Amino acid sequence: MPAGVSWSRYLRMLGASMFAMFAGAQVVHQYYLPDLSIPEIPPKPGELHTELQGYKLRKEASAALQQLKAEEKMD
Image (cartoon, rainbow, N blue to C red; front, side):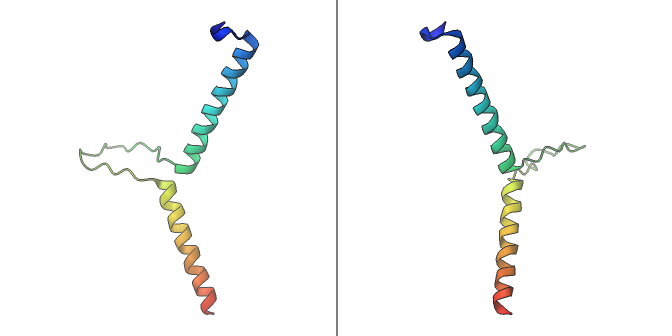
């Protein structure tokens, strides 16, 4: 076996590394919330705007929360 390890240890490490890779990809996917919709008409060159939807939503939500807190303090 590669690097002089047993098959069981090799398969455990392979499984652990694959699990970590898939879990990390899922965490990143959930954090950034990519827009996976496919438009019917593709954009013309230079019109494609990529933005982080998840970041934009979190930023808007935090701004709204700050505004509500400010309004509560005024009352």
